[in-house]
Image (tube, rainbow, N blue to C red):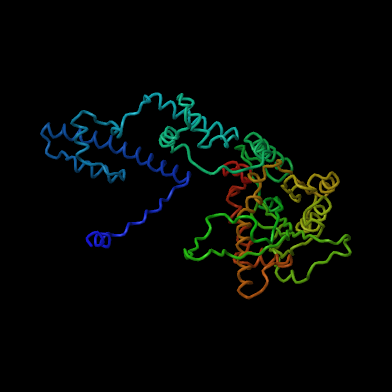
Length: 485
């Protein structure tokens, strides 16, 4: 009975708490925060000990207003945001360690200080050289730990202890992030020398063609009327598949019952894709977009577009080459792949871009400049010669560098985020109304223009594109702001 009673009165075991592990990026940020606080604490400690040592000398000389250790620590802690104890300050001053960093805690390292300091500097240099030479994939924990062990002649087993210590003491200069996968050709083209050469030529050509003037201080100025005649266009693929692509940011947290299966969130599944080409002027005004649909028709006579799509396509207001602000319609095109080719690009240029500038002429002040990428149709000899005769110049960007050199390409990032948010919002609304969520191409205007956020008004406006050209110096501000122009 006694044994049974003991069992009944034994309290139940407490379940083991689940340990939450930090990601490598969070761990490195933790090291950065600790190192910054350590340096701040060291500064405060040196000032407190030096100050209190002076106060002790004043007290010995008979001065009555000498401050105590408590008063000194209170003011120093308030200044640096630290928590230095008065007894610690008194101890260091008593032992003659005035103005020195606090002693390190723990067992002394087997590596001499001067060797460890050199190792940290070599580690920082190695990481940055790999990054500069576009070999960032070699900066992983496993590779770096192996190299540190090899330097210290500890090749028997892969250990991370030394790497963690070095990362802790170099956390301010070295951060942690995920390695992004990029195309090899883009990495090789996107160099400082290539980009600087392109912008120098861009500056020279704008001055030579009359779009800008060089001032006495060697700076370059673009007048207001010419900012409207410099255009950057780019194309992007729009997919109606709600499961493709990412929106950016952290996904929304969803709470679920532990005893029930997680069903997930419904999205539209579609193979429909089309191409949108649009852009903006150097003054930050959006140009009307052009949509290129796919079709199975083999001849232009058999190509058809549903007229219902026009109800979701508003006009775009802009002045461009006119005296007053006018409304400009959205344009459309069709081909077998739903993308741009040489013929479609030529038609797009003469049907969508040239009408915006009815005053175009091959004279200074009336010409237009288009900054484009190296996509299909951009370098057609017949097209370039025709445009040159009427006063339109296509300025090709450097291949494989549009992500850092074109405003429109950078604006497509937030646009895709908004586009996919609108697509998801429209899908959920149709599901709640018991309607099919597989969207048809003719609804593209509903997603682009009339979703939760209006794309052209909220994105391609002066708010986003006048910051690099506040002084009408597009290329120089582009260099300062990450080459955005």
